[in-house]
Length: 169
Image (cartoon, rainbow, N blue to C red; front, side, top):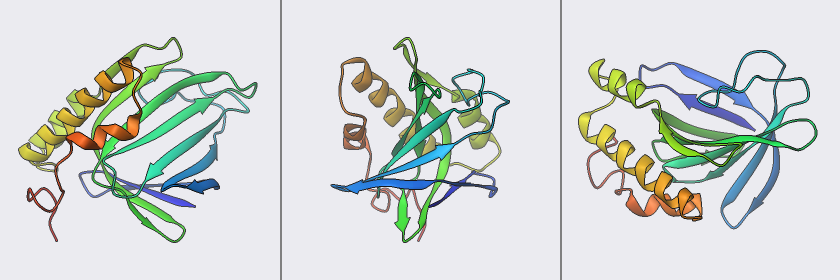
């Protein structure tokens, strides 16, 4: 499965993984990582044998990434806030809205990378309206996670992407 992680300034990061399951609209893709570097927003070092799951629902403004050590210990979770996910055969595509929510290995939940979102707005890559939507979804998601809710409920705060003029087309 190819994952196209678009950035607001038109750059695309392409990732790949193996489809683990597809059930009730939830696509789960497994990825492996080389040792070296750190996990985005979590800060933990990448070690040999680390792997992760990407959980995706078509049309969702949120996707979940869970990272594991080789022994199965959870490193943490990163919830990406993005334009609604497009699912096509063999492809997941979205544009990252820069702000994320993390749940660290110790259970602490926080909204991160708001400065990256502000920078994308300043550079003209994300509109003010879309940035406010992303921020609202991120804070709603963080509250949901702290209360023990399901991350997929965060879309209840999201507008219809075409109805609010947030996405062209």
